Length: 145
Length: 119
Image (cartoon, rainbow over all chains, first blue to last red; front, side, top):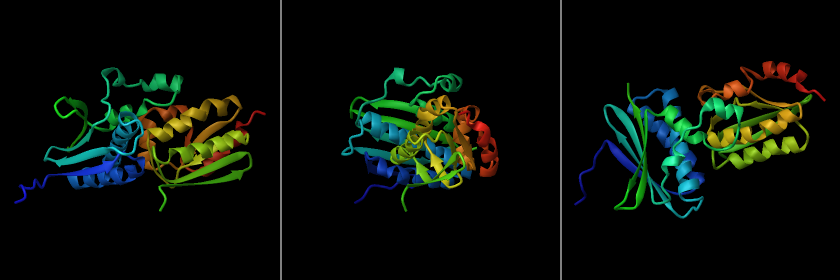
C-alpha cells in the first residue's frame, strides 16, 4: 500500500543539465502563484531558483550532466519553501560572501551575482550539508504576506 | 519554441540587438556570441532592445559586464531599452541601472546613442 501523500509538497528530479532550467523556473513561477504570491514576486522566485539550480549544475557538479538535482516544493500557510538537493560539491563558507553592488560596478567582473540575486529576491537562503547521506541542500524561502 | 532567439539590425551607427525568450546558463553562450560578434565587427554602440526578453539570469548579466569595458574603451556603449518589469527588477536590484543607461523605448535610446561615437 502506498504511503500517505502530503498534498502540500511534491518533488521533481531533473538531470544536472542546463537545458532543464527553463522547465524548473517555469514551475517555480507557477508554484509561487499557486502559493498566493503576486506576479512580480513569482518572477523573482523563479530567478532565485534558476540561480540556485545553475550553481548546482555548474559548480557543485562542474557541468557534468549525468547527475541528479532534486527539488521539493513545500506549500505552507506562511511561506513557499523550495529545497534543492544534490550530491556534488558543497558550497564553502568563504564562497558565501555577497559582492557589494557598488564595488561590483566600480570593478566589473563575471560571476558572484547569482548569490546576490538569490539573497535579494528571497526572504531566506540556507545552505546545509547532510553528513549521513552526503547530500547538500540549498533552501529558498519566500514568505507569504 | 527555442529558449532564445536573437535578431540584429543596424540603424545608422547603432547595432540593435533584440533577444527574445530567456537568457540563462543554457542560452547565454548564444547571447555572448552575438555581442562578441558585434564588437569584433567594430560595432561598439549597441542597443539591447529587451521588449521580447522574458527573463535574464546572472549568466546573461555577466555576458554584458564582460564586454562593457571594451566597448567603452572604443568610444561606444551598451544601452538598454524596453525592459519588462521583471527584467528591470534584476538590473535594478544589482545596481546595473547605474552602470547602464536605460530607456523606456528604442526611439529615446537611439536619440541618446547617436552622439555616442567619438571616432
